[in-house]
Amino acid sequence: MVDKDNLTFVEHLEELRGRIMIIAYFLIGGLIIGFFIAKPVIYYITNDDFTQTLELNAFRITDPLTIYIAMIIIIAFIIVSPVILYEIWAFISPGLHPKEQKVTLSYIPFSLFLFVGGLLFSYFIIFPYLIAFTMGLADDMGIKQTIGIKEYFSELFKFTIPFGFVFQLPILLLFLTRLGIVTPMFLKKNRKYAYFILLVVAALIAPPDFMTHMLFTIPMILLYEISIIISKIGYKKYLKAEQKLMEEELGMDEDDTKQP
Image (cartoon, rainbow, N blue to C red; front, side):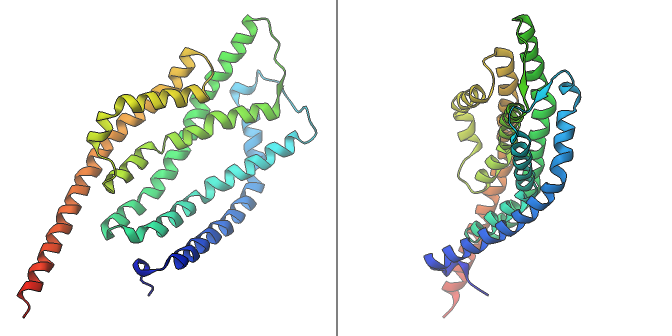
């Protein structure tokens, strides 16, 4: 069995290369699956209830193909994301304690669940409101909208995918807490800076409308507060693990001194 703690820099690079190749193989499989389910997904999106009032047009011959390829890639990455996370975990896990390895490995399914939850939340809550707001604004201004299918999906991806990553915040902060990198006290102390960053992120992805901006910001602030609560649990476990490790090391030192 290879002792990963004693690997050279070149051997670490070889290991990293091997894990990237594994991800690439699975990604090819994900692309094949995406090839078959991308069309039904696109059809569902373009025929959803809140799109019935929209007339979607393809202004270029290649627009449907561009959307199709983009959807295949997104589906593939979602399907393969557990493998990507596992390979990242397997690469960094030798630097963790055995209990930390087991605990952080269990984060992977939760991470996928939260990512998909973020996509669904944005698609069913945020995006329909955005459509209704912009259509109402156009009517008030006497503007007839001609919407391109490529532009529609571009906006859809812009508003949904970031929420998938934002919903990773509780898992990310729990992971950092279990490693001792951040603490609940640090998160509380820097709450105002975190809120400012979240406001900036919301401003980058939300339209220049106060209500829509708040609709983006409030869920992110709630996620941050939930992350603080979760990090308290993780921090207690981190302290217990460190205390147990210290006790084990002290016990080993005592055994060494007793030996003749």
